[in-house]
Length: 558
Image (tube, rainbow, N blue to C red):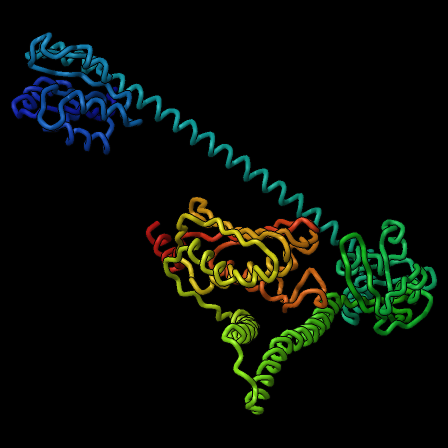
């Protein structure tokens, strides 16, 4: 009986000397295996990347990469970590320590000239081991494939059985549904086609719910259409359009069940954190398709429209208040300017007044300059509202020293601080440089300092600038009236103030503009405060902020 030819087992021969390779090939040729030769360690490694070998016969002394280094690299690779390595060398024993060969993973160490029979015997062992290993691997793969095929076959059979069961169940269900509910289905289709959603079908007089769709069940958790659901939600509150509380018998379901025809009845509801407004419509369906007389109740959820209406009304109030504040704020400096100008004109018209001392002229001019500055600041704020609302708040980024800007702004406010009775302290000795818009940073510091002097009059005001790694931090601390906790976030909104306008002037725009600028520069602004304990406003700005195009470049490189 003839056996099929056995596949040749690959053996790697590595020697930089051609005669050495020829000698190895001649010695191992009788084994009848696949002999692969390499003239260097690098060439041997390339062979190892593409093929598994039963054994590697490796010369020790080779240029560039010797046998030990080659062996170490072979052992580092997971796939070739266990490949047998036999070192061959013409060096005498003792010239190269044998323990080094075994340290790098060699299984044997032979000196040239070697005994051919011994070498063939050693290699034959590794050839047999390679064949057995491959046989075990192939048997394992065959077993896995057989198990996979068996699993797939069982799974297919199970799916077929399940599909058959589902088909039988569907057929039985459909048959029962068609027998028991054909008339009911027609009746419900007519109702759903005739009425808006969310909707419910009620039993006359009792108000018992016969049917409701999902929208009706979700609206106020069903309280508006399920009379019995009120027992499940004792905290639910319902009011009419005037805010008067509605008892259970005045709810849409109860009224419709009693026979009332509802045509846009307004109901406002509150349940836990949920609030809303709905309009109720009702009518009666006569007997049809074998069904008795039924009440149709439809609810139209107008919560979003109601909220929009409230927001519009609030916007109108805010506009009116803003116009009133703007008129007052603009009238004050204009009145002062008008008084000074009229006085100067009267003096000039008389022509008999003695010249005023220089100091009085300077004082009058300083007053005029102060009022002009107030007008300029108010106009700038109004212009910023337009720019921010239109999305046209542009930034010209340059290298800016935040500490220098703070010192400059503080020097401009020395007289204002004196008038407010505030001792102004700046802690910004070291430069803190970042890529910002200098004009906008100046505006942020100006608005925060103006706010501190206004609400912290009579108490010290401290400005601090520190470098916090990739960020710069500015703190403006005052000892004024403070801010209630519920107002700490609201004060950063447009036209919002934590105090009445009668007590403190201003549009309620300064902190909103600060928030818009800081956010536009990629930073954050926050406040810590307690009523009567003053307030600390903290601004954090990234010192380096890449453009969006830079982000695109990084994404492309990644």
